[in-house]
Length: 357
Image: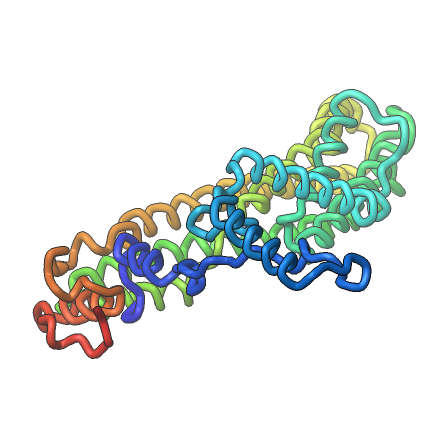
């Protein structure tokens, strides 16, 4: 932070330094393309000189073939956004065809809500902004949900949750619960870390140190303790919860509630296995809901930290007025900001070590 000016001053410095070094040079016309081969069009030397002089005179009034950088009109932003969206759509379609769809084991002939949710999870996993490791994990997790749905609802309704289906479903459900519990614990830790960082920033704001040192310590604290938020990950958790609910959870609860009236004749072991599977499936849904909620809380904490401590740091520093001589060049502006921020006053014109006009 000691070498970085606040955003308004940094933008001014950037605009001063980001000037093309060749912008003041005039691009000469390409005369060689207009000359004919002497072997094919032999003419006297004086005629060639006259044509050359004429071409030079006409070139003065004709527009430059390569306009200067400062005269160049950039492409419309709407056109750039359209090209960007087109490239992203093409990349997403390529990921969907080559990576996602071949890896998923969806059954054929789905329709209604199940088909809609299936297409939604496929499109989400095909997003180019999604990390490759995250995509692989949720592809495997999606296949587990498909296998779980097949294991639970494979037979007739009268044969719902038979001993073989319970054993197979419990194994798959345990694997899913392990992963979603890990995600839940990770996001819970991030929420706690964000709260601790907020408390530490409050302490740093009360310390009697210079603003530059304070900003440097605050940046080190935030970058070392907090992780970047990815909205695609939060959206993926929401889509996966919807996929799990529509494919497994809701149908299971509906059939399970109807089955409870017929369990008086079963042995205690069978009832315990069914109850244990029901609890596991409910724990998966609860862990996903908590993860989504904690992700929203964590994202809100990062926004609060950014808005309170890192949006307008220049407001807490007394900067030299713009009319001072030290603002003749970007280097003097940078030196003035650092010197004033450190409490050494405003530099005079003869203190600038740079060769400025």
